[in-house]
Image 1 (cartoon, rainbow, N blue to C red):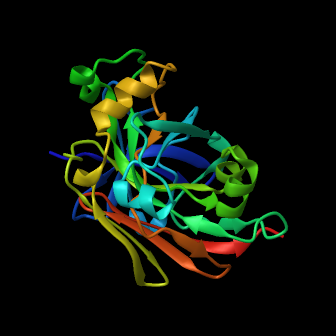
Image 2 (image 1 turned 180 degrees about the vertical axis):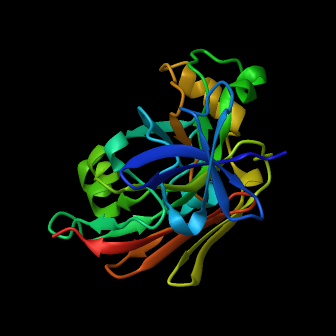
Length: 258
């Protein structure tokens, strides 16, 4: 049975909870959800809490050009090995929070809808065949990118690293087969991206093995698995939604940072 884990704020505090399917209720968890879920007995209607980013990771490891059609639209061939880069933890925001467009620094900020993997335990050098053992669950992500700065800088740290450039949510599905899920991105209700995760060039176990051969992964760390074709610019005032089958929809509005 799928367990849907959310982080929510109620009053001055933030806690993890289990979203009870069909009841529109979140049941509070005692502490964090790693290593077993213990409920406190407190339950709140979803309408009375604010759902925030489902995890605050120590790092976000993202994968570039992991769909062949996206690699082509970027004007190149897909890499033979996973292409990894980092987004800072300070780029993470949750559902309903605003993406801040840094208009004084960038003239083209793009959406990139992606499936995100949430790591569930400390791990390093994970074999492909054991990769699923370290997965806590899956959520939706938007790898927001200042495309002009990406091209200008020749490396991606600034383009990918602005505050608010990593929306995650709305929650984590802990029991989900990620191998063939529908993924869509829409801007103001207009469909922009549509693909299936079966088209990933490097599948999720391969990505976990590759990334963990480079760096230790901690509980709550996020791996963004790559975006399909159809990326494009957002403007101030736009509403961007990333939907993934079996998880839900992550929606954020774009505002001006300046």
